[in-house]
Structure formats: C-alpha cells, structure tokens
Length: 277
Figure 1 (cartoon, helix red, strand yellow):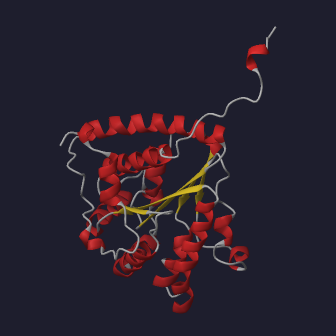
Figure 2 (figure 1 turned 90 degrees about the vertical axis):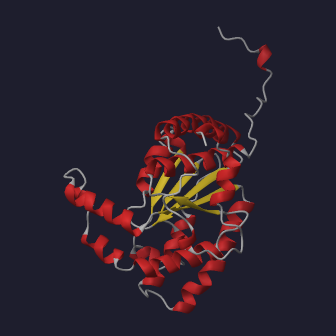
Figure 3 (figure 1 turned 45 degrees about the vertical axis):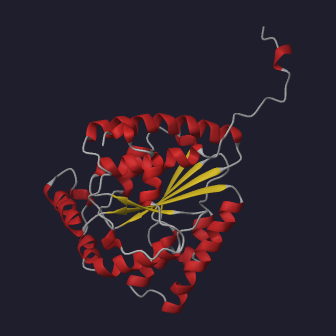
C-alpha cells in the first residue's frame, strides 16, 4: 500500500474505540503502521497536515464558535512530548495552550478532581493540548491506591458527563492513547541512560513506574473501555514507530477539525464604501 492511498476514514475506524467496546490492549499491535513502510513519504504527509492545521486554526480563531481539546495519554516514554512538538509546531502559539498535569498541588487537592482540568479548557477559537489529563485520576490513583476503589470507580461516569458538557458547549474533544510495547519502553529508557543529551530526562521513578506495567495496562484498558464516547472518542495509536504515531495523530486531528465545516465570518461593514487614504 502506498502512503497516498491511505484514507483518514481507514485510520479513524482502525484506531477509534467504539462506545461500549471492551478493550484488551494485547489485541492492538504497537508496531502497526497500516501497511506503510516509507517513513519519508509519511513525513511529507505530516508536513502537509501541519500546513492544513495552521489554516484550520485560523478558521477556528476567526469563527470563534468552537474550541479543540486534544488529550494525550500513554505509558512513560510513549511520546506525548514528541507528538506535541512534531504535530503542533505549525500552529500559532497565541491560540494554542499546552497543559501538563503532574501530581496535584495542595490547593488542587482541596477541590474536586476536575477543578484543575476545567480551568484549563481552551476558550472558543483556541486549541488546548493536555499532556496527561483528568484521566490520571483513574490511572495513577488506582494503581497506587491513592483513593478508595469506590472513589475512582465513580469517576468514569463523572468524566463522561463532564466531557459531554464540554461537547454540548462546542468543545471538540479528541483523545489519543499512545500505545508502545514494554520492549520499546526499555529501549527508550536505555537511550536516556546512554545519550548525554537525554540524561536529563531519566529519573529513578521511571524504573519504579515500569515495575507497575501490568497494573497500568489494566487501568488503561478500563479507561478506554468506559470512556470512549461519540462526543469524546478515544483512539489507540500504535506508537513504537514515532513517524507513524505523528502521521496518524495529525491525520485524525486535521480530518476531525475539518469536519466542523468552519467559515471565515462575513464583515458587518459595507467594505465597498470604505476608502483608505
């Protein structure tokens, strides 16, 4: 299959989790590239998508009717930062905000778990990107027993209702799980150890988190199974090959943002009567 023959609809249907589907991540190949083997051709399409996204952002901002929220989740080293830098580097920074959610602060813990999330939802006309997200509250808190089971279990439905409210208020939500294998994570962690330019990325906590791989896998599977909806779909993106990860994410974002059928607003002035001297 040649790169130009790949249809965005094919990617959408292959990677989208239909509402109600029970997900088993072992059924998804993180090495999968949809028949593509030509990295250079995929990168050419990526660059074309970056240009398209820049134009779509102008429409989004000018029309000021919708917002776009992109959520990125995945195991450590799955490429959340890399996806942001490669896919979004053509957008205007004035209309795009990246929020990285780490351990909640004392102030955030004094509010409901969605409080810090709602504060960072993009304004109409803007793009928001979440590097990790509200889903940490059904992932980390579950794996590390930070809250009772009854608490995190209730959060799936709370998240769905929250995202439905956002969708009803014209926030387009696209959620990407960057799927890598345990073997690929090992290679990427070793690269951080062996490459002086990547040493700063390495943390001993990476090793401790890796020991919890199976528990995180189960948590991600339930998250994907219970929180992929028509208004806020989850996509499982094969991410062992960084070039394909970037290509697939960019394709889906461009197609879904384009589906809003945005138009530049007409001026309320009679521009034919205006003369500039």
